[in-house]
Structure formats: C-alpha cells, structure tokens
Length: 181
Image (cartoon, rainbow, N blue to C red):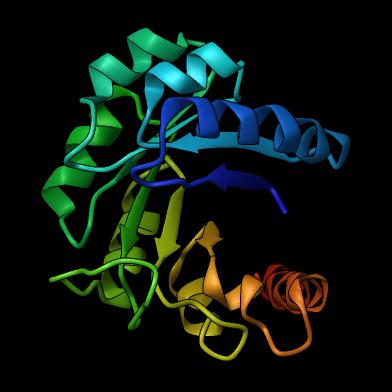
C-alpha cells in the first residue's frame, strides 16, 4: 500500500488529530505515506505526509501553503479534464478521478470513464488515482487504462476475506499489470 488516507468527514478536530497520532506511526512503519482528507490545516498540524483535497475543500494554493512544498497535495478532479489540467499546472502531486463505479462511501452525481485515465496517462506525467467503488473484481480496467494508483475503501474494509486478504489481491492485480507493461 503506497498511501493511507485518513478520511473522517465531519468529525471534531480533536478526533482527527487523535486518530492521526495513533495511525500515522503504523503507516510509517510499513513505509506507507499518511495523508489527511480535506484538511490541510490538520495535515500540517499532525505532521502528516500530505493532504487530499476535493473541489469543495481548500484551494490547491491554500493546501500547498498549509503543508509546504515537501509534502503531498492531491486533488480530486471528478470526471473533468479541465479541473485535472488546472491541478496539474498548479503543481498537484497527483490528480484523482472518479467515481468509476457505484460507491457507498459518498454520494456522487458524476461518473468518470476509463477514457479519461487513458487520455491523462498519455499526455501528462502527474500521476492519476482512480476512485470510487473499486474492488478486486473491477480494478483491472482502471489499471489497463492508465491509473497509477487505486483509492480503495469498502473494497478493502468490507472484503469478505478481510482487509489483509483484499490488499494482497489488489497488490497481485497491480503486480500483474506492471509485468504486462
């Protein structure tokens, strides 16, 4: 796992910081980056490796100013080429597209398609992340279309064989894809 994103929507700052204090050392012990969702201020305060911001959160400039130049800032771009190009031009460390599939993690009114991943990966060097309803059964098309990373929540935490087995299956899929490339 390349990154763990702490996503505690609408929780008090103290809870987010307490969770970061407990979880960040676990992530770092596995050589996994630790990002906080939506809150550049808490990412900076906690010492997280960076922040992931949505279009309704802080601007890229605000996020970068809060966490500094040496930490990661990733930007959700939904299904928009325009938003992705702006984020990339501003200096985002990665852009995220989605939702690709139905998801119970949040309500979305847009759907991204794999041609967006193909377009991005052919034209830009900034890595792209696929988000939304991703499982071990449906991730291959995203990887084949150019996704550099997969953002997975329920596909890991609700996996019938448990989270550890889910991560093994995702890693096997990614390894197989990289061997083909």
